Image (cartoon, rainbow, N blue to C red; front, side):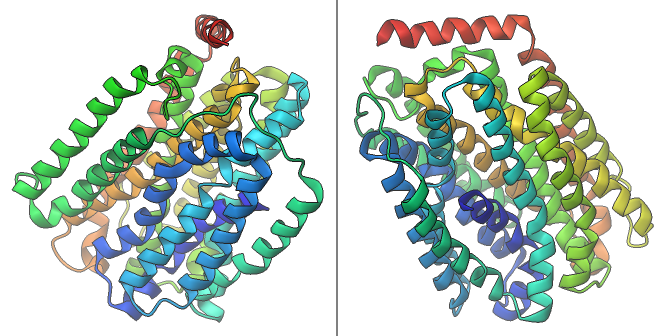
Length: 456
């Protein structure tokens, strides 16, 4: 239920963007921040939440996250303006950061037998895929029938039920050894992600050569380099760089960034196209994305079972090929593109996205000791959110740069480079998946696990 909340909320807001823009008089960059403020806070805090849960108790942090997310949802539904909405979205994100990695850590510590764990992770990945796919459909119905504020109301009863069920069914667990708090590392992560995203979103307005944008990009670079130099010197780093000696783990991280960047960009562009260019209502736009949701619904659980039976290689390669093809189908998009062709692209892209979640999680955790499950799962979840934030920022920036007039007339031409970026992300998933799921990659994962055994 917690994963349903977080996954659905990541996409349900997309279909409400045009309504929010009209009601609160928001610019295109304002719409980007409505999505990215949530994702950035979520991405920045995931690793801290994962290590904190390992130290203080996974059930305790999990329940705290549910409470914060539910309260944040209520506040979002009452927001009087864009600034308040963005601030309350950030409250939601603080709570959401305590859910995904902690849920995965709970699963990993409850299911100790590798085959059972792979099947459980498959179910987990299936829920993520289903929730992300259903978000636009449910959002369209709510926006059309009740209004955009209702997309936040739906979280409240689910959150309250999840809090009670957690107390009843989830056992408390902690890591064998408590990890220290890495405040400096946490600050560096926030500075790097926030400054990079702000620069990408604001660049079309200010210009890439403006002192503000150059300064923000420089700040992101300095923060990243400082993080890479500082973290290996700590006993308990926020980001343990030894994880990346495992080719499957590094590959899963890169695949997550590319796949979720493609998915968030795909949804952002389609929401604007269907409502602003084609003139569809929020409900009609949500129903148009139903094929994407159906394919995620079908193929996410199948991917989990396939990973459990045959490993991650086949589903991740198929996912990359399908996502690349789905993006390519829309590179020639016009105002009058056939609806059948549009829906076909959603089917192809949704198939790929449905397949990609389970192999990301399984590959990220393969070979990792259970004592590191919370941190490893948090890095994988962070990669998803970083990809989602950058996807919206990049495609929105490309769209803004190419837009010569209003969205209704200039979108089709201005969005074509963005569709090529979406397709390129799918191609990257295919290539990285092929490189990091073979015998050589498995060997690097085994050697990385021994590093932690020796340290312990």
